[in-house]
Amino acid sequence: MADEKKWLSVPGQFQKLSEHVDRLFDEIIHRPWGFTRQVPEWNPSVDLYETPEAFVLEVDLPGVNKEGVNVEVEGQDLILRGERSSERHQSSDKFHYQERYSGTFMRRMTLPESVNKEKIEAEFRDGVLRVILPKTKEAK
Image (cartoon, rainbow, N blue to C red):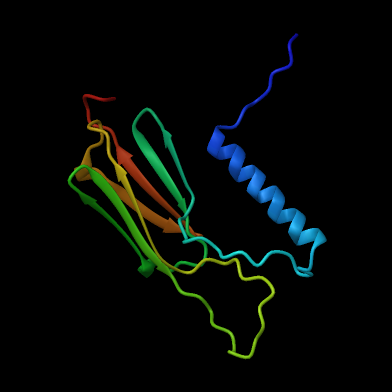
């Protein structure tokens, strides 16, 4: 049986190389507490899966209050907006790591024609937003 290798795309290879070099600097050079890179803008992780009756979108939103989340349909797009406030520490505190994301986010996804936009439902529980996108009768 031949060995199977999983190849990364060229941008993926550069990203891996960049992460590896950063880790080397973190561990070897003068960064006693690890990296000091800027944290990128917050973009919550999503899972989208399909059942016989609907598409289901689950969005990880730890630390976000239910009141801080908005789900709306605009044309053929599903738009998720929200905000997570950061707990500010005293200005004299010196951070060694600051990786927790805060601020606003927006995710926009184009809905397929097979979604019944009039019956979309959303629920928010335990830091996870779950959006149920029912299929039209024709798509089932």
